[in-house]
Image 1 (tube, rainbow, N blue to C red):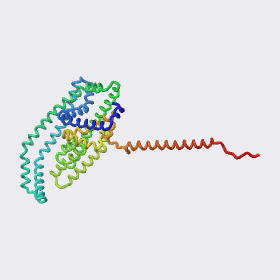
Image 2: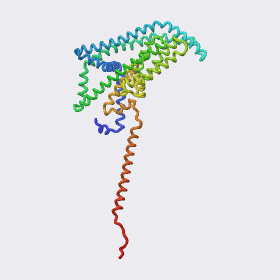
Image 3: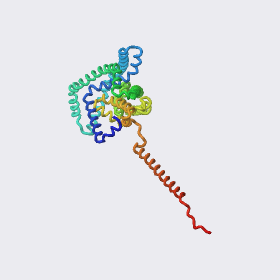
Image 4: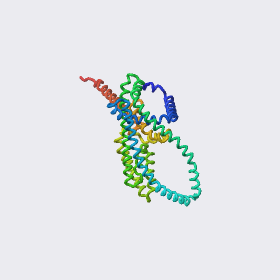
Length: 395
């Protein structure tokens, strides 16, 4: 559809059509969430693994190259989980001490609440007991999500294999959808989008690793128990902007409160995390993730909240990479560039309407000035052309 055809539709038709399309899209995403969530993860992982697969494919056939790529990825993820499991075992060993300190804190909290608000301790214990009595239903409600998670984990490698195997088919479909005269433009957009998305995903991974290392080092220096586990969890939660940072800092604060006396540990955790966030936002993200794919704070918060309402925690993790991919695509398609501008961080110094208004004002002033100059020139020419009036001749 050309720009002239789009302008042929009035606003009161275009706006309801766009709104209806958005409502239908959100409804479909919500209904098909169980299918689309593993697909989205598989697409992002496929894009991330594509450079490795391309290199391996040069030295072996297609199917073994895909399998080798998946094996390398699984080994890397398995090594990460093994490392975390060893650290979690250290955390489990310190559970009795943590439980004892937590019990003391709860006792102090009960006494304080009774003194300040007059709440009876027996009522608190009864409420706690009634809450624990529902553990069976809580366990039953937990089995379903756990089984769903396991099925998703098993589906994702299968999807990644199929995406890499059918990559030529998917590209051929995209070229066939558009007219042949647009094939060169489509190839350019696909090439630029693939390179930008790969760079974006690799940048996110590198940023996450660096933040995990910085968090772990800071917590080890402060002396927080299970510092590496908490630091890695904080680095992963950092993928969720703003909200993830709050949860990430709450974990070490809770651990310090339980295991240490005084408030120096809490203050050290807050200062160190603020410094790490400053380094991440001002050094790592602009230089590693690339400033071309940065998303403004308003869209980030809205996207994370909508992703959480749509697909839960997985939706919150998928929100920012998905919006980043959409921005890359929007920036490279002429008809969608306004949406790319809306998602980005570049704020114009002046509204474009005011800019054009000033330009037209300058043009009109020049036209008026030119008219005045032409009128003055015409008047001067008319004065010169008038015959000189002389007095009567004398003899």
